[in-house]
Every structure is written in C-alpha cells, then in structure tokens.
Amino acid sequence: MEMSHRSKVFVEIAAEMEALMRELMGIPANYKVLYLQGGASMQFAQIPMNLMVSKKADYLDTGEFASKAIGEAEKFGTVNIVASSKEDKYTYIPDIDPENLDASADYLHMTTNNTIFGTRHAAVPKVSVPLVSDMSSCILSEVYDVNDYGLIYAGAQKNIAPAGVTFVIIREDLLARSADDLPYMFSYKTLAKNESMINTPPCYSMYMAKLVFEWLKDFGGVAAIQKVNEEKAQILYDHVDNSKLFSNPVRVADRSIMNVPFVTGNEELDSKFIKEAEKAGFVNLKGHRIVGGMRASIYNAMPSQGVKALVEFMKIFEVENK
Ligand SMILES: Cc1ncc(COP(=O)(O)O)c(C=O)c1O
Image 1 (cartoon, rainbow, N blue to C red):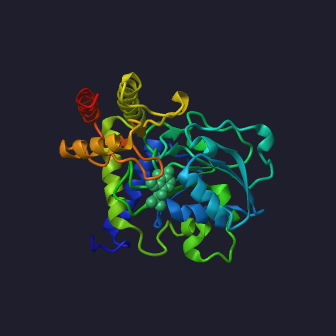
Image 2 (image 1 turned 135 degrees about the horizontal axis):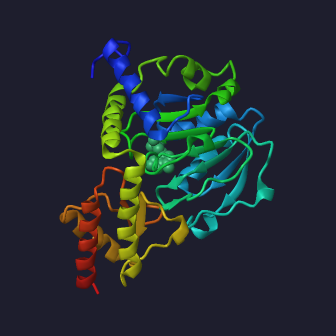
Image 3 (image 1 turned 45 degrees about the vertical axis):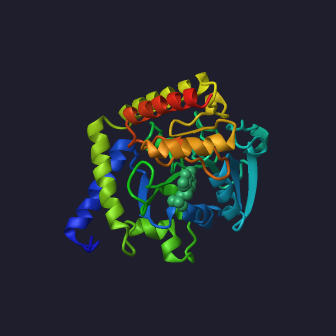
C-alpha cells in the first residue's frame, strides 16, 4: 500500500487492470480508460465541465442520482430534461418522445441502473448525439456494447472494488472538447494524455479491481455473470410477486437485476423485517430513506445461495406476520 505509483510493480498492476477491463467489457481501441477519484458524484460536474461545449445537454430524469447529475450540469449550461418519471416516484423508465430531443445538444445523459428505485434501461436510447451513461450500479453486471456510448462512468464500489477508484471510459474524439484552461485534474484530455497518473491514483482500489477482474474472467466473463444475475433477480421478483405480504412497485419491463426494492405496505412491519433479517444474518436490507421499505442489492459478489436464503427467510416472516 505504500508502493510508489511510478514503480515498475504498480505500473504493471495498472496496465494489467486496464487490459482485463478492456477484455471483459470489449472496450474498443478508440476509447480511453481513465481511473479517477471523487466518485461518480464528481463526474456529475466533470462531464459538463469537459463536454458541454455549446452549453446545452439533454438529460433523462430517472432517479435520485440522475437528478443530482442534472443539478450539477445546470451549473455549466442549459439542461433539457427529455423525459422524467419523477411524478410517479421513479417507478419506471420513461419513454423518450423524439420531439423532445435536441439534435444540437452536446450529449444525452442517462443512468443505466437506478440504484435507489430499482429500475434499469433494458434498451439503449436511440439518439444522434453522444450518449453518456452512469453505470455505477450495473457496470459488468450484464453485457453492454461500449460502441453505443460516448462516455461510460462508474464508481468502483458495487461491482468492481472497494470505494476509491472511479472509471471513465471515453471515446477519443470527445477528448478534444476539454478546454485548454481547465484545471489539469479536471481535464479528461490532460488526464488521458498522462494515463490518469498526473498525481497518485487510487492504487489500492485499482489493485483490488485487478483481482476482481481476474475473478470475473475465471468465472466466464460478463455474459456468464449476467446469466447468474438474471436468475438471482428472477428468484426474488417471482417470490415478491407471488407473496401476499411483499410487493415491488416497479414496472416489470424496467426492473433492475442489481437492486430489488420491496415493501410490506406497513412501515412498522418493514422495520420489524429489517431488524429480524439482520439478526438472521441478512444485513444492508434497509431501503434508501427516500423510498423506505427494503432493498436487496444483489451485485455480482452476491451468490445465488444468498438470494435463495433471503427468500426462505421472507417466507417464514410472512407466515409469522400474517
Ligand atoms: C447510479 C449511481 N450514481 C452515482 C452514485 C454516487 O456514487 P459515488 O458515491 O461514487 O459518488 C451512486 C452511488 O450509489 C449510484 O448508485
């Protein structure tokens, strides 16, 4: 952990990490991979800072993080909200009316998986401008075609590594947009030119990312984990949909395979469930404070047995609390 980031050993770790990520995600040669700090939240600002050259961008409003990204972008230019499901508590992915799209927008920003609300874009929106996506809670969970995007970003802390590193996968032609007077730590162009090593990168998190990428490769890659993720989610959704106690408010076609929210409809019973679940060894099931209830986050590291055990616990709780 005290190793210099310029040492031969660490430079090799970084190179292996990037090569594995490129292989797993099929990242084409005309994309740069940046490893930065500041979390996905910093990207909410860094994206418009670099890419909003004509000071206007289209955004999809599909949840809390999408709306935070919108708030930050508004500090740099005009944000056109193309579609929103806010009025319905973000329980679905809204359709895009092509008339709302601005062909001269600098980019369209989307959040592929909405962590808090448990929705996900099952299809890539068709747009003529570069697509920018926040994949923080779904990167490497299913196969994505990187060619569909101008920029993909994700904090590491769900499917990749402990918090610390944030990945930005950017198509090279977009690097030219970074203004020369941007502070160097914020300029995609300068960061890319310096292999993200202008200063000390989040070395430990990157080392862990390399180990996780090796694990995922041995597992069979993204297509293999996608199959497991879809099975895990289906087990949980099937149980919730057939239960008389639990329910999930999300439109079926838009359901996330990473985050499954569910409620009993009674706040006291929800609290009781969370407490008893914790005693039985099921931790982190409390839903985000905005939505309440429960949320099972079933990222790549959660095996099927974990989901099956949760379903068994839910069955017993339902019988005992009829
Ligand atoms: C989809 C999404 N975007 C952004 C964030 C914020 O990420 P960070 O804490 O890395 O800034 C999160 C965190 O949970 C998230 O799930």
